[in-house]
Length: 106
Image 1 (cartoon, rainbow, N blue to C red):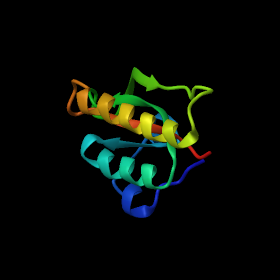
Image 2 (cartoon, rainbow, N blue to C red; image 1 turned 30 degrees about the vertical axis):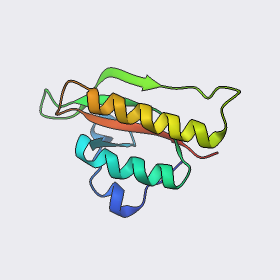
Image 3 (cartoon, rainbow, N blue to C red; image 1 turned 135 degrees about the vertical axis):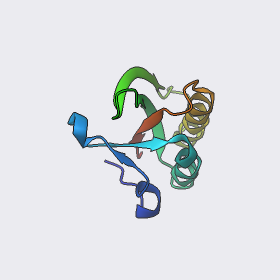
């Protein structure tokens, strides 16, 4: 399991209230996280979207996921997936949604 440094994880939103031991992040926090991941060669395999329509964050079942192709180097996969994650999050229509990131080291 990839653990983000404290300066990035401190703004995370705990999902323990829905029995998920993970964190979600607001859109404004994602660029710094993606920068760290790219610098450390950590891939974003995909992610999930959560909304706060009921006073607490819950999954809305929107998500993205990208597989590594046989022709892709790990470095290209990291770079491509970080760009795809950035585009997905930037273009997500609900500006108040938060996002989980599924991460992997080589």
